[in-house]
Amino acid sequence: MISHYKLSSVLLLAIFCSAMGCSTSNEKSETKTLIAAPELNVDSAYSFIQKQVDFGPRVPNSEAHKVAGEWFEEKFKSYGAKVYLQEFEEYTYNGVKVELKNIVASFNPEKKKRLLLAAHWDTRPFADSDPENKKAQFDGANDGGSGVGILLEIARIVGSVKSPEVGIDIILFDGEDYGDSDEDYGRMTGDKDSWWCLGSQYWSKKKHIPNYTAYYGVLLDMVGAKDATFYYDGVSQENAGRVLTQVWETAHQLGYQNYFKMESALPNGLIDDHVYVNKYARIPMIDILDYRKTQKSFFPSHHTTQDNMEGISKATLKAVGETLLAVIYNE
Image (cartoon, rainbow, N blue to C red; front, side, top):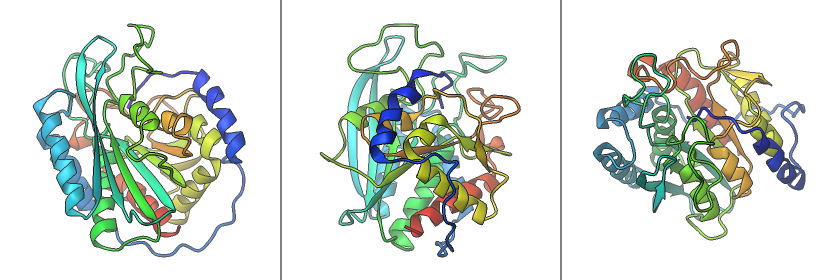
């Protein structure tokens, strides 16, 4: 997950909300009785995170990155998904040419009503928030690994346990976390808006299927840490307010109100993959992202060498995974 804020992004996206008739998350929606969703196997989700960590830091151009990408592709196929690969080259803020790959897994391709679920699968190449070694690589168990782990478990359920009534498209975005902490450093090249979120910028402008769209999208980022809290962010409120309300209310119905806080706390102008899905793909997407309001920061080991399996909480994975499954199976 990135750490740079860009105040103008919310303003740039507000027009889209008006066109789509979005509501803000403060609006009250009618609570409905939830249909029971298939059970989440939290041990399975946890093992998917462990598998990524076992590969090593999934830094673009590394062997771990290559092998992990191939494993994701085969895993999705084993669950019956139609898999699309977007392989492309980009330059990072410091001039490194990187080989990137977005991985798209589609379930129920015949369904016209589709939900888009996403996370990033790359690992930041340096622990620039670490108090001791800012150049070290790190596991990325939570930042990247946790969102992917939950989505792989959802793919397993959708593909081999029970098919939902809607089509499901899962995208693992690459190149999300290779940005500089100061976007004024270096010169933008080509049509990039940001040094962050390279994969979602690419996909949002060049979708895996021409004219692809979805009813809405949900992005997972840093969703496995102990004591995680998820607040509303401005981009989600402006572009997908009804979806934001629906997901948070579902979480509360399931008893996860300690995780999902019905209030705004994230700084305006947060840049994450959902910014570009909203802006260019024109798909209303929300972000479920761990933010600690009291500390005014992300989870404690964000971009440090302590982002490892010791920080992953099965209770948090359960709260996020069960909420997302309930949303999917109640559409």
